Image 1: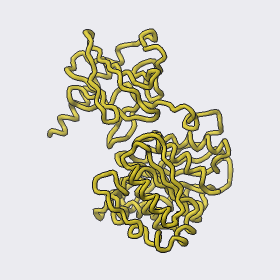
Image 2 (image 1 turned 135 degrees about the vertical axis):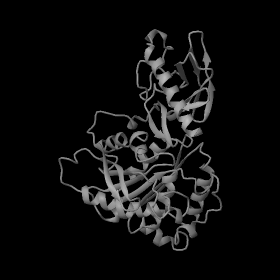
Image 3 (image 1 turned 45 degrees about the horizontal axis):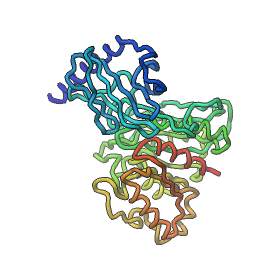
Length: 391
């Protein structure tokens, strides 16, 4: 009952704020000088506004509310109310990239009707996009564009129809050639939409392919939140915890793609990668199924430490042969790549495990990027990883 009441309150508050925001127009003269409307806004002539120092100014019309906050990446900012019922606040300077946020109106957290919505944090979320200088490969440019399609396949694991999002490069529809394929996995609280929407996969690949920095490839984003009918679940940082999604990927997703798309079907033409939870899936499934994948990317996983329950990770026990038959392990993989954000709590644990790998002779590429556990780091990870593939 409590959940139902909260949901009703959230719906009422969202409707009220939405009506009030829609009713109020903003003149350009009222905007702070030098500010701009992020691409994540619905109304590109409204609020929120990104200021010259990358702080963000929010403005919400809610005259009947008693308290309004902005929850930006877990940091809450108290908004100040003016006599006309308008609430405003300016955040501290934000790092470039994609940031989830929520309105908290009288204690109820809701999506901001002024923002586009993205599935993240286990719910529909608002977002602010702050561009980073020098990373125009994340933007739409005047190059040949591929397509992102949403298709459905039948899962024998989940016993239901499930969605996939599939990027095909420019020229796919007109040509006859077969393409290598990357199976890319989202993080916890997200789904198959994450990489294609928040992650800007199509923009990144279009620009890299057009510049000759990456070979044309297909990228498949599946929903790895799999609940097997036998009670298994597709998450968890253990080999056993990966089994439901492993079955989903190997027995359902890959066969569907290879039946319905022009893809190369040898192991050297397949890659698996993912972020956070998806990084753990890629580590276990990708590295323990070398007959399926010859290329693996692990981005910002917490399985080595930095999250609750992760400690004392035994490389040899989790990937048999990695340290005791390293020569064979290295020969099996064309690309093994790992990354993490430099402000991510997982970074030191990741660096330590990479050092153990290097000390043991494992051939693994590693890079870190400025940022926490966030999409700008994962975009850069994909941007780098795909340039190594299928050469």
